[in-house]
Image 1 (tube, chains in turn cyan, yellow):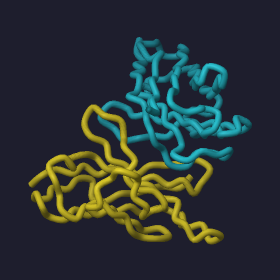
Image 2 (cartoon, rainbow over the protein chains, first blue to last red):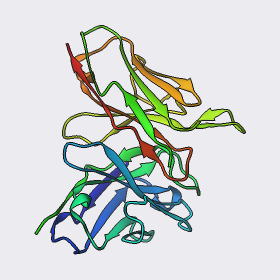
Image 3 (tube, rainbow over the protein chains, first blue to last red):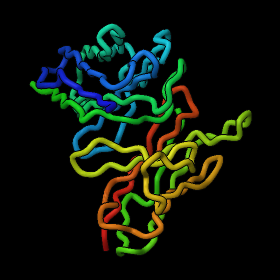
Length: 123
Length: 113
């Protein structure tokens, strides 16, 4: 069964850092582009970042560019999101999501999704 | 970035009736070389992650009931639920993947009248 399990969320002060992890099972992570999508409390979905199936390209929303870094460890089948200089507006549930179809390219449409991990940014 | 705008923001429909949700993109998401619209639809129920319903604007994901259908091309798209069931209460999102950076619509909340 294909599964994604996020971890690493929590409470962090403004300006702080956090590293999110996503454990993939049931498929080879390096065969797919992988994404992070967030959802602020009571709000809609916002795509945040992606890493291509080949691993050679990374993509970021303007709102996080220069502050967040996506990476993966193929040997562990793990996806990561390093979040620095966190702001109040970064508070959200962060979902890890896989491209539906395997390939070397960038993000397209997403399935499956993990259950999400909550990031709270507050002093 | 391509901006996706859904209408209405919320919708109440009687059980068994048709529900229609619209999505408009700020530029065409039709790729001329393969004649495909780079548009997907998701369903999100309370406390759950989103679930993919439709991609390529009209291709139903495996396991999705056939009462869900997608249509449209270019900049205007529609998600239709032909006969609303109680389990369809959710927020629905459209998403484009034509641009390098994917973007979502703001969501449409569907309720039972």
